[in-house]
Amino acid sequence: MADEALTQLHAQIDSIRRQAYAEGYAAAMKRIHELASQSLPQQSEKPTAPNGSGSGENGTERPEPNQAAIPLRTRNAVRRPPAKRRAARSAATDTRRSRRGRAKRGANAQMIQEILKKAAPRAVRQAEIRRSLEQRGVLLPYPSIGHALGQLKARKSAKQVGKSGTWRYSAAA
Image (tube, rainbow, N blue to C red; front, side, top):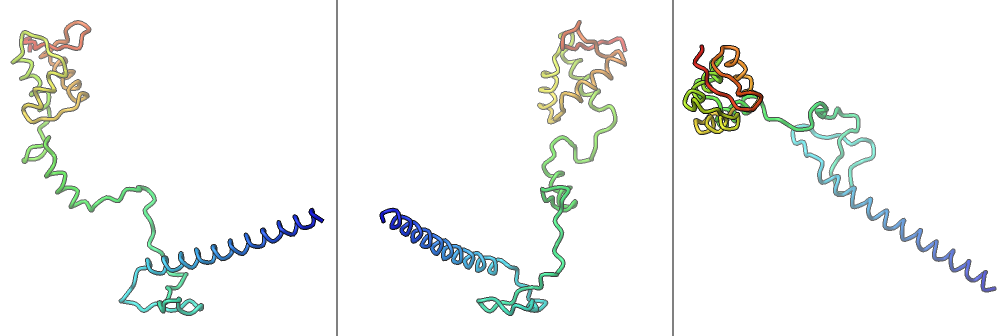
């Protein structure tokens, strides 16, 4: 008898749970539907035709489900501004380039050669070269400095001191 009462109690609890779940689910779906219908863009130019199910609960008509959607860009997740704005923004914020445009070929090597001349006969590290370039308002990455030093070495205008990372001006050119 106690077992039978216990199973009936469990059955009643189960049915109450199912009813509560169904009511909660229905309320949640109704709220989602309301929010979704509010966030749909209103197109005042073209009237929207009902899709066979009539209008929504708040009197707004839904667009047809077979309308072409606006494609998403899949190659790049980040939206970029048009090229004109990018060029204007980069020209305004770029401190490396002069107003005349791009630097002439070999300009980095010439600037570094001047720095080595001023520091002669003392040897100079790349970090010190970069610092003095920054004081002139030129931002040059380390690989570019290394490439320019290689050019100067080929012209015999600069020598690397042993296997250290220091460079010295050479007047042998």
